Image 1 (spheres, helix red, strand yellow):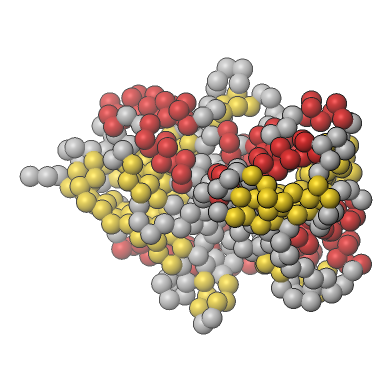
Image 2: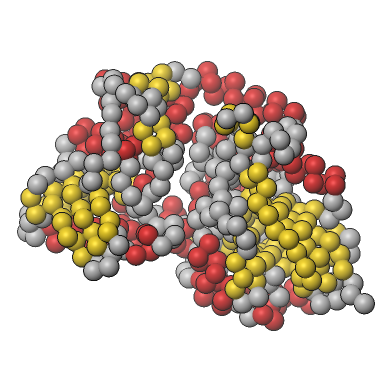
Length: 488
């Protein structure tokens, strides 16, 4: 006779400071108060409940950025996850600050493969073992260097550099702790849904990994993917939904007997609001409203940025403002740096800060036509259109690209109506984040660029530039105009 025990695992990822509910039609949707209400309800209804967060708790709201994540940790402490792993945005305020925030957390923040290069000492607790109802559930936290671009400037810090090495690190931990009779093993990752599949394929079944709960790619899935006997899930982004596993664990075989998984909508119809959480968030909200609740400008219409791997109206406006203000040939505005799906028509300062939360320096560099074409080819690589969470860019006015994915060729490539001159030097601007990762993101090295001319900082804050331009130029508008056309 089987020895079965029920385990319920709730999971979120890429919450990005999505603390407040939104009115959508007749419903109040999302927000941590309703999310907390759902988690508390399930904890009352079910015996064995664990709640895990797969990275990127930070960024996305002024409540987070104003307090550099300290407010977020306070809110997460009240939400009460059992375990969380780090995502790439956990290091946005600096690694040392993240280590401080980790000390503020009342829950374990785990990561197995982020280390000090000199002695390979891990920076975080690599795993967490939850014990309940006679079961032991092992969580292992994984991130890879591809999503740690914020740490590139710190030569002392490293990660096991690829999925293969991350897989071996999982094996090392599983081998070391399976001896204490682990009943269930979860990888809590922040590498993207497709990378999770690759990782699962590399894992030895003898290591006993049952489930991968992931983040980073903001994937909404309808059912778990199954790779190498491992079920892989993700819960989109924000707090509008939560993932839920209900699992019957065979504690003799230390494996899943049966399970169900679903993506639960979070709204005022599916759960009651946690009033204590609401009061706690409102404490921060009142303080930030004093500073951020002022009007910057009014657009003629709402501008949208629905996806990162295509031209958008909001992306065009941001790139154009920076190009015109800085007097350069081309602004490459990182699509992922624009964090709002829409902005306007009335733009409050809070809206602008949440849309452009990173507020970085802008670097100017000079590249010739041949180098610029190579950079554009890197942007348009196939991974950008296949669900991968790759870096992409919005182009300022004057750029015209028609790219054939089938031929892997430019059908049109002009700047200000002229074909790129292979020898001519063009002035290009990038934010600091993209400048520091230029080899990986744009397939060109800083050493090669410096041969043309020394790069220089044009501004210490691109958000300041955007705000000033918007204040001085009311009734701005923008539209998708065919700067980038991608053909299959």
